[in-house]
Length: 239
Image 1: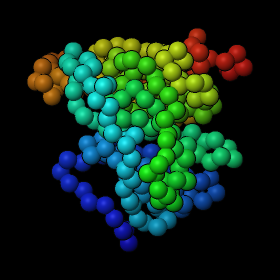
Image 2: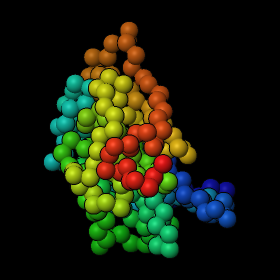
Image 3: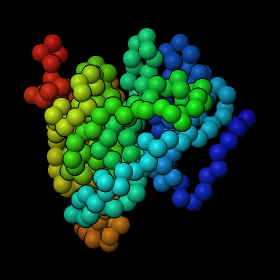
């Protein structure tokens, strides 16, 4: 039996699921589901067959980060929590790195806080600012290199950041950029050595300027090591 303790309404925007599984206890898995429309987080426990909503100011969009350009259109959508990536911190547990779509800031919270329904009222999860025009949707973590990958909507690009370096504009690199094929990256996932992404031209669709005779949807894959080669994330000891 599944116990849902949250209410869903028409404005909900559940666009991404990030799953945390303990190696020796698959039944004790948790799913973290963003809601960019109502700017919140849904946590689901497989063991308990229950879910609950988490709210925090860091899930909300940043008004100062609105009005950037994507696919030739100015974006003023108040989209909140979007990108989420799990980073294992060893003895300290696992951190969920996250950010709203309309924001250049990055945040992180230990997943123990989310799984135990602890209060977030006085918590401060800010770890840094990625810099101007770094508004990004989906993100994921490549554990072998320690690199976070971002689908950078504001520049039609893929960004990378070594998670142990300070989160600032200096340490963020662009590894791919194409206003057409990477116009609006709607999903980005890391699987083993590969970075997969889906992209589209949704701003053109929303503003009725999409050309149906052109390719507007793309599925792409790249090797993580190849993408970070020559960037600040490319350490000498990595192959």
